[in-house]
View 1 (cartoon, rainbow, N blue to C red):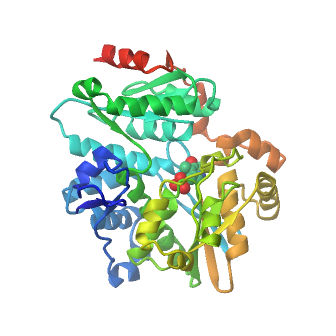
View 2 (cartoon, rainbow, N blue to C red):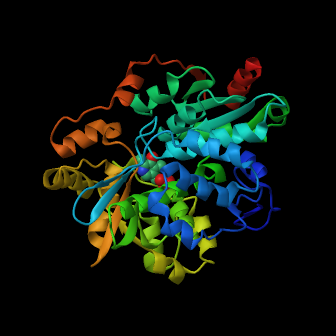
Length: 433
Ligand SMILES: *Cc1c(COP(=O)(O)O)cnc(C)c1O
């Protein structure tokens, strides 16, 4: 399968090139040239398939031409080493819990898949690949854990000193093995600048095989389609006959875009709901037809604090640039911090279900969006305990911390402290050789 750039000013590339490059040279995002419609027989029988069987069928449609079948299925099954259950919250709303992976957030799926696919493409030749990733918190943990112990890959996580939460920091500084954490005396933007400069630096590129594990990478983004099919099958198993609406707490819009791909593959989804916090750029676009990015504001659903969602380009491309077409498939809603806090408290009280601040936006949006004879599924994108202080205050009580999360807290932090100038970073990389 070939991949083209959303800007269409770069050559089409193979899957392996799209994965190693991440971003196209014209700064567009890679898109697969075809989206295969799965057969009616597949959907008719989906309730009797296992999660792994479903995911393998979806993976075949995208990657089957480029990776030998057995190897691809091994990658899929390794990736989904944890469940993605659908849990009933109330009469018409279900939660698709995507927080049962190693870092308790949905990004585990994409990161684990990408690590394994990259490892497949680089093979055993030409020495290790060095993955550079700048993080403001959550991406670093998903990428570090996704790549942990994967052969032929070294991961260097750059993060701003003192600017990530303790639990986030522990999730990528305690791992050791092929993961190194660099604690940069600066901001997230400084970390990102160092990574970008490294990719442009001739000497470093001669000495190292550098790549990024950015969330726009097709190998991180496409596997997120798996769990829409898996959730649909779970609904069917409960005898559900109402039409399904998916609500997705959205920041960079990668997760929801993977859902749109699933629908193109024939998944019977009535519509999608994009749930935002106060960073409601997409909602404003739906209302006005004008896309106007603006600087993000900080909220308690901080993984959605995005002012210029990178996957917007993919959504536009999927719908031929037509806002009417987009409106016919996606509704938008947005909530401020007070409303999110209230929803966490109210929902716990009335249903016994504990939301995290991101899932709370997805849940609220379904409450507004659902109509007669529809069942809503929101993506619960992270475990509430990852946002302990916020959630405990909103819920008005202590909450249990899962063992996997507690285990990170007990690990010993190891990091390399560096100033934020490029020369120091370069010197550090050189001496690693
Ligand atoms: C990254 C993230 C999101 C936003 O997902 P996008 O694919 O960027 O829209 C939502 N919730 C949580 C917990 C996240 O970590």
